[in-house]
Amino acid sequence: MLTKDLAICIRAVDYSETSQVVTFFARESGKISAIAKGSKRPKSAFDGPIEILSHGRILFSDSGREKLATLTEFEPAYDSPDLAGPSGDFFALNCCFFAAELIGNLTHDYDPHPELFDGFLLFLQNAGRHETKHHTLAALILFQLGLLKEIGLQLILNYCVNCKTPKRPMDDGRKDDGRSSSLVPRPSSLVYFSSSANGLICRDCEPSFPDKIRLSCSAAACLTNLKQIPDAAEATLREIEKVLVRHFTDLLGRPPKMAKHILGG
Image 1 (cartoon, rainbow, N blue to C red):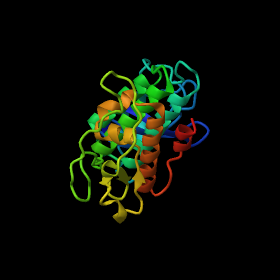
Image 2 (image 1 turned 60 degrees about the vertical axis):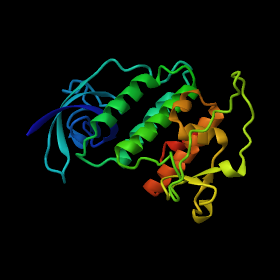
Image 3 (image 1 turned 135 degrees about the vertical axis):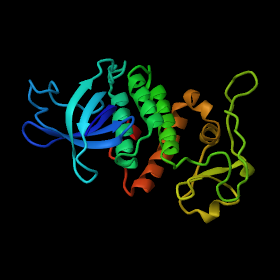
Image 4 (image 1 turned 45 degrees about the vertical axis):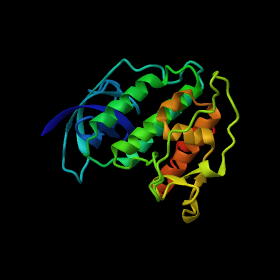
């Protein structure tokens, strides 16, 4: 049975001198691994090797859940922006590879997530258009939070996971006149993140969670009010990303391979 779908390539490895094994994240079919016979031939039906992050229409034959599907057609879209970004430092490209790695590791075969697919495609299309690393990192963080929500692992950020005490959105450290002010956390307002708890922990409950990470006021403010993330300082974004990488590491049982290129970038 042949199936048509819109898909994004999230992994591609050589199978032979002329063929590849590719993994697609498809809108209606979910994650699919398929053999693309002859894809590396210049005059093949695929017009050359299939590249990671390329997207377009696919036609594949499902050989059963336990076997590789057979890719018969791939019609790539040609509206993809330059993922190197305006600065040419490839940070945006690494963020896209990281997003693809997370989708590959956290989704199941033939388990469709149409909204996640749409969000991933939008993230890829916009990645190279951001003017700074700051904006790219903010977009990555929002994508990662959306990914966790879509796969049923949404972080609990509006109350203490343990005692259920509500966490009000914190201010962003600005005075009424718009000027920045220093944020000095008071003991009563300390907020922690625990991966094992899957969310925020208050000061009273944190002793019960050895894996907790203390958050700065600015990071806590962003996590309790996600609308603040696009305008957050780069240091705050990097703090949040470190927390998320720690969480993904716990979920996967190992550090994501691309994480070092994001945190080191």
